Length: 107
Image 1 (spheres, rainbow, N blue to C red):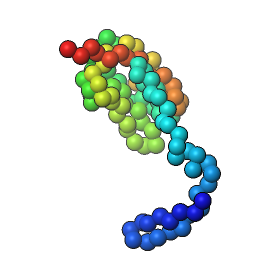
Image 2: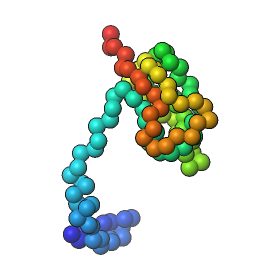
Image 3: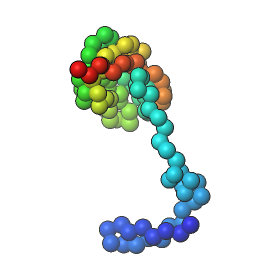
Image 4: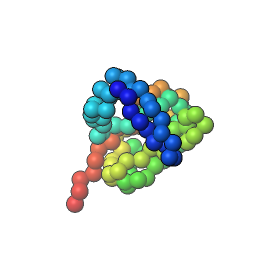
């Protein structure tokens, strides 16, 4: 399928593949709402969260260094840390389990 893309006023003709067309209609995978997995291979550089502690929404749970960038992993909800499966300095693979948590009950 041919498409025209406009970038800063310049038009470019593209030839999108069938694979791309099929991927546009695909739903994103459901996220597990009880664990954090590494989204990229890297090294654990900081773990401010502690087992059994409540972590406020937006607070750093774990920091992962990958490709010379430090990624702070946060959640949008308050959570209680159930278990931490890595230590500072560990090298992790993509999709490796890092932390299990449970959502706090809303009052």
